[in-house]
Amino acid sequence: MFRDISLCILLMLTTTAISASDIPLPAFDIDGISGWKEKSFSGKTSYRTVNLADIPALKAESKASASGLYHERRIDLHKTPWLNWQWRIENRLPPADEKSKAGDDYSARIYVVIDGGLLLWKTLALSYTWSSNAARGDTWDNAFAGSNVKMLALRTRDDAISRWYTEKRNVYEDLKKQFGKTIRYIDAVAVMTDTDNSGGQAVAYYADIFFSQQ
Image (cartoon, rainbow, N blue to C red; front, top):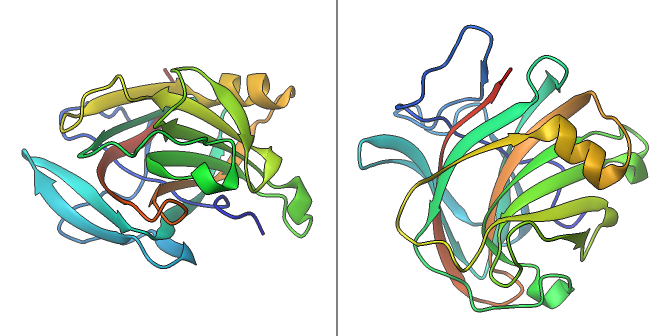
């Protein structure tokens, strides 16, 4: 099994208009985290639903822990290639070598996962990260899973804390660029805030996650 892949996702914005063709993931609201499952790797990051500035969100609080939430759903990237979400962090982690196992901690990250079934070595994942050290747009192999899991720095130390950012990524194109082949379907989305390797602490929020045609 991979150290920190295989599952985790979320969120959706109340200020974002959702069309009939869009595919929302289970919302973080008064019903809690219904529709999401937890996977622990080292201790448990605390995940709970909150209302932050009138936005229903998932609050993740890690204290030397590593666990994530994931939602299993098959998404046809030919129909809805765009992944949309909101996130924010409340503190920055100290700069670390994120290409090493000792530095594989992130205030926030969201994964898309391609399930290899019984052939676990064929499972692939792409992780959009809030990096403590890399430059925006940098990519690298995951320290634990190698080339099966690609890391992409979407937010960095240059981005402000305690403010929402809205993201939109063409997952179909990102997967083709990172793995060198066309991938039509993904099987799960996951979110994860973890600080187990550094022994530090991080607080992050996720909201409004959905797939769209454009």
